[in-house]
Image (tube, rainbow, N blue to C red; front, side):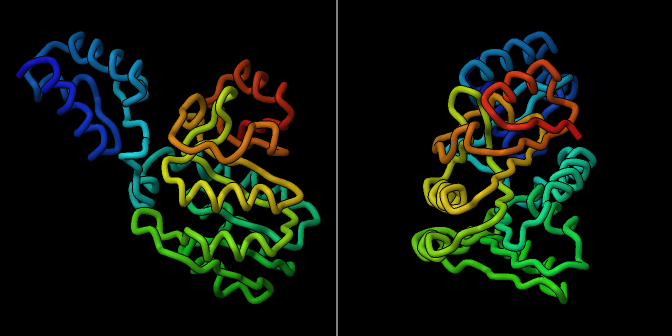
Length: 253
């Protein structure tokens, strides 16, 4: 197996699993751990993977996106803390947009059930989670349903959102960086997110630390467009401070 073949296999493994571990993959491919580390460093420079302690995971791109099901297996404890903290920012909002994705789904589950709220969402999973909340009115946006995330996109969803003014939007993204803002791989998803940002008075980005510094295909908002960023303590305090200098309050839950 030559270098290019090995790196293609590493990328396939990273995309098909929740991540790869250097020790295990080195044994499987019968090469040294240093060879795998060198491969992963090169692949990270190409924007294909993000290295972690002892391994790496695939970076989402226009050709690759993780499914909602796979997201339920990664950084679950951190995502639960983020969701609780984000739900605590509800304040006096009466109308709320909740984005697609696993962390927004956890935010939906963390919202108080003892007050009246109108929740607008393009996520079938969020709508299902809140459907039995007696004091909530749930508005599900129409459109094409994406298999990977069980969310509606395209013109119907964007047009419905364009006619609404939302008090608070909980926004997710596949990547966030100080240079490129909030990004997502799919243009259809990007347009729905951009419309949610445009049509809301307050905007909260919620996402785990692994999303920071990641850049995917479509930018739908700048960092300064959000009021608050809620993440976990995996984001170093110094990096959180750099984001806060752009305007938002950064909460490390």
